[in-house]
Length: 324
Image (cartoon, rainbow, N blue to C red; front, side):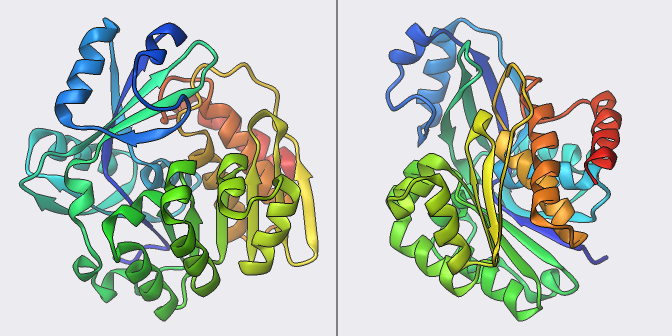
């Protein structure tokens, strides 16, 4: 079976906790960022919070693929899970969501990301990376990529040594477009020079938010979008409730966000990418693609976690029709 869209990323179970700003201040690291932690640290943070958690399938690339699958795209996810019950659960959840699991296995436990959600809806992530960090470029086989039209990578793949570049090279070899989500400002700060190399050499579409754009280029949002579009085919800078800047060639626009009171911003950028890439696969103008992204992003911030409920998708489909 061939897939039009392949995601490369970490198969992670999301553990969501509602916490106060006061409690978050006691957790090491910056609010709104992502930092790796040990399994013991994760258990301690959860235990001290006293909050009841929600566990759902996650991982940035998976979140984007889930949206794309609901838009009717044929998708597969490449990653590594543990030979544990969580790995089995993750595989089954992918299949239920219409995403084919191309998952390798390790004796290391399956990854978990702890999303600490404050009353303003912002999420702060602390991640036990588990088996996700063990996959490397040599695990990838060319035949998986044959027939693909798009390969989408999350920035977290940069922790996996040569994985990102190997996947991008294979995508380029088979004639597939490459989209890359920079994922977090910490990742940009850690891998800045390598990211710039990958963008110049392989990437067709780059997704980032204003913090990531500034960490990468030292520029404000619109100027960063212009610069990214010089390097890649499409440059995108997301600005939350302020919308986004997008540019392809000489066509540049600012797309407003749809007003919403967020419950949880987990997956907002990932689902924006789903909507945008769905439009891109149909060769729509970038302003229409950005409206598609805004519609999907608005829907996911109204629920806890990165999974939009089934009954919400019909409303999304109707809004997409009106956006054309």
